[in-house]
Length: 331
Image 1 (cartoon, rainbow, N blue to C red):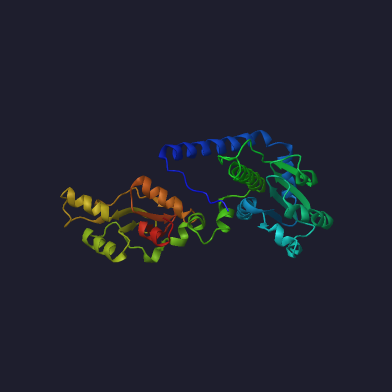
Image 2 (tube, rainbow, N blue to C red; image 1 turned 45 degrees about the vertical axis):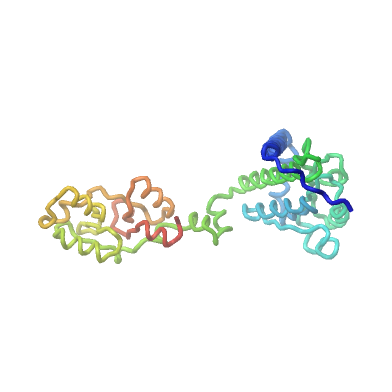
């Protein structure tokens, strides 16, 4: 048995091969643009009309790509799952119904495991979309729709290891998924609903009303409150701010920790006067139904640490600060 021995390491050769690999794979993906044609559009139309699920299958490295395509489809509005072709011929074909569509990946188009299950798929009445690198292959000929993912060469120096071909197949699968999500009108909130456990879901599904302190927990004082009393109220509130409201409950000003520090820096007389003399008369508001990430954007852009929550010209509904957003893991 021949045992390969490593060549002496050459940093320059490693860099050249790395760059060459990226160039070959980039060219392979770029070449796919000319193959986004009527067959691609027909594949999108067929999957959109599917009353079952998209079953994605492939052997070896194509199987790994097929799993990723199935996962991308499922997370972007197209019900999909992966079926291993070898397992399919040993019972897993029962997962596939006549209302499903099989998306079969094989670079050669001659994968024995896939070809073995094609007759059974057709007998059930399920439709077949093939993604291969050989338009004249058996799998391509048997398919209802063929997507050409062929590449001029692999990035492997021996032109053997699946490299550029798997990259091209993955990119073509992504193109299919993006076209489908657009046709379905699949938006950011739909995406977040399929990712509720991650940071993306928290960012896209969390609204201001979910993280704000309600009005009864926000320190509020009238404009004629002595400054010292307002500072005590702010300290007890734990928000780093105190809201100043008129008799109708509408916030007409805000006084924050930052305002207090600036007053000290200017050596203002803090022992006399009322809060109306020191408050910011143009407080920033956000509505409760806005996304919490919008509150983050406002605070960062305006370089402030707190926001009052209210509808236009309405009473104060609450407030929030950066700590609330950190605690909710929005940021």
